[in-house]
Amino acid sequence: MHPIARNLRRAGAEKKPMDRSLLYISRKTIPLETDKAEIANILATARVHNAKVGITGGLINTNYAFAQLLEGPGEAIDDLMERIEDDPRHVNVQILRYYPITRRKLPDWSMAYSGPSSYVANRIEPLLGKDLEPDHRQIDRLAAMLVQFASAHDDPAELAEARGEPPPAWS
Ligand SMILES: Cc1cc2nc3c(=O)[nH]c(=O)nc-3n(C[C@H](O)[C@H](O)[C@H](O)COP(=O)(O)O)c2cc1C
Image 1 (tube, rainbow, N blue to C red):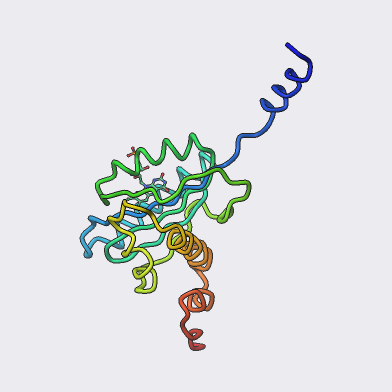
Image 2 (image 1 turned 180 degrees about the horizontal axis):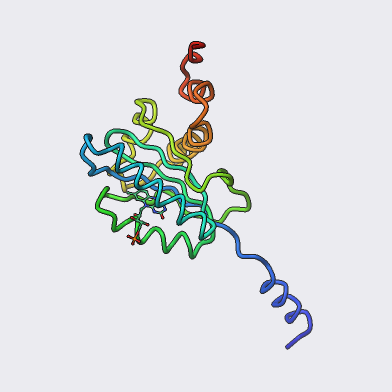
């Protein structure tokens, strides 16, 4: 083999494979009465499993829909997505985008979570069931909102700001 080709091959082999980012939305099948408990179950499983395989991300939901961002090694994401797609707690799992990334948006959360809100609903629900011609701007806005909400999830002031609401009153 030509020395340059050999060097290139070596460089390629030593390069760490890039992480990938996947965003999907789905329609919930969980009855409202058991919603809280089921989401707690999902998060408990997700936090243990994702930490083990190097996945981070965020989950948001409305009364009817989920949106989830998964970031990490491609093989781990593919493997997890197979299980998520088979999960009976939702249907119509629509992958909106999936591509290699150099930097994660939610590197510090094995699975960040933000509870339901009508603001989130307005961003997710119009996209549900639309598999024709995805609107990339709408998808990017959803991803940005998910990152903002998920990373603000335990700070009521940041969450209010993300929702465009006045800051919570001091108690
Ligand atoms: C909306 C939604 C999001 C989920 N996110 C994750 C996740 O990030 N990580 C995870 O391990 N499981 C997640 N799960 C749970 C998986 O679908 C599955 O139940 C779990 O990985 C256990 O799979 P197993 O029973 O085949 O071992 C999610 C489920 C739902 C409905």
